[in-house]
Length: 190
Image 1: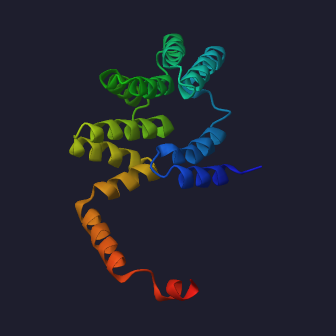
Image 2 (image 1 turned 180 degrees about the vertical axis):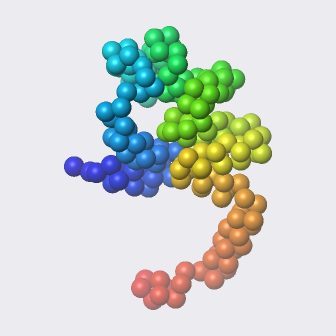
């Protein structure tokens, strides 16, 4: 059986530009907080809301966005003070193409999480990705900086990609490698 770290490494290898490498951090944090009640919510309501949220995520992963949105909306109605469902509904809304509503849900998730913890980290990353796609690079940089401060390695990579000096260095390195070809030891091995 693969460890959480093994799964995170494989996820990063197969999907290097997807922020799911954060799963490793989230699982560790969830394990550490497993006994603590989330946000002081009633445990029964929390269990029901988390179940609806899980169903919504599964539906979204299966391409059933209408069902996903319905389940996530039910979870929000059940516990409107819980940030996680807003964050996940934002992703489903983004997949549906409703970017404006996705941003509203992300803002709600960030407000409810008080800008801290794994939900905020993921919310800042999602907001940064949307802002970057919309061409709002300074806003995206700010969102990625906030996510990076919360430990997001994906956000750190995005900040490096947005750095014009890093882009110039990468371009120059690519040119040198193209002109020089593979290292001598590689040429000899072939």
